[in-house]
Amino acid sequence: MMKRLLYRYNPWWDSGFEFTNIIERYDVESQLRNTLNDKSIVFLTGLRRIGKTTLMKLLIRYLINEKGICSNHIMYVSVDDYLLKDNTLTEIIDEYRKIHKIPFDKLIFLFFDEITYQQDYELQLKNLYDSQNVKVYASSSSASLLKKRKSLLTGRHHTFEISPLTFNEYLIFKNIIIKGVDEHLRDSYFVDYLKCGGMPEYVLNNNVEYLKNLVDDIIMKDIAAMHNIKNTSVLKDYFLLLMERSGKQLSINKISLILNVSPDTSRRYFDLFVDTFLIYSLPRYGKTNSRILSPKKIYACDLGVRNLFTGYRDWGSMFENYVFLQLKDRGLSYVYDNAIEIDFITDHKELIEVKYHNEELSEKQRTLFEKTIATSKYIIRNQQDLENFISKD
Image (cartoon, rainbow, N blue to C red):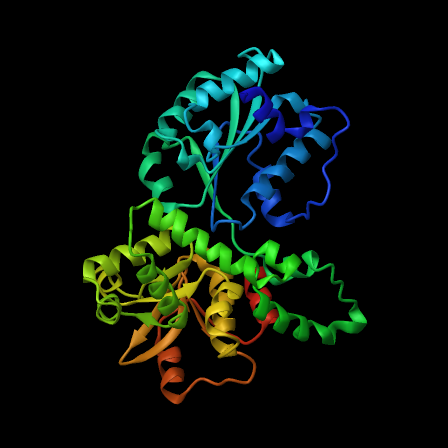
């Protein structure tokens, strides 16, 4: 039975197979290609259905079509398949080697989707890394399960968080080409992007039910089922409150009062939403004590998901959420002083205020903006400002 299942997961093992209908994500894929020649285990993390599996398939296509790797030396499998629940990674790989008569000294490429569903996955991967000639890519939609268990793999792994499509990737997925003479259309398409967000499947199909089912799956499967939470209606209400507070400071205790749960339960639920990449939290800028104890600002995982719950209101907040998603890997925090806030300061002390189009800083904001010590200061008003900021590096 396993042989049949593995052939189903790996259609490239059969002659005449061609990869079709896979849209490139060039920037992310190029980063993954750069890891092919080292032995490290590569983890892909991020929101469920964000495109981790597609990126694995793109890498497999590249190995076969561009690098000339024998297709039989590449195996992909989704570890959360119930038909594999009683099999260890070693048993799966042993069966794979038997099918293709692959000796242990031959390099093989292994792709494991949703690796954290495999019990003791970190020990199994360590043994693979230490004893076999393998290159391993593995994905997970849970940050906490990945983080808690990979201490055994210290020095043996790299982690890439896969984000929603950027605006430029959105244009590629929508097959939109903006000619130089039509540059004036860019702002209009960007407004469409702010409404739609960057979930790849939703960008292609624009099916609202898809987004609803995505959020339900994460709440019911990745949070409630995995952590034995019975009251799922409270979880859903909690998430709605989070979406309504997107871009604002959040009080864990206030939410606990609104939902009539304990502060500890409120904190636990909040952490689970962060762990499954549904939300991101942003600490306050300052000394360690301030960063830990002060309220966090929160941002939605994706604009389409956010808009599903809040509608198209507050374009400035929507744009700020987008800017955060593009810059979140720069060690961001927010600046707060006497009830006045500046949106972001990076770990390189670059101060950033987001003002959509014609919005202006208030007098008190400008005072705080000017007096805050920073290496450089920016006001980002549109997509071009953001691209200029990113490209300066």
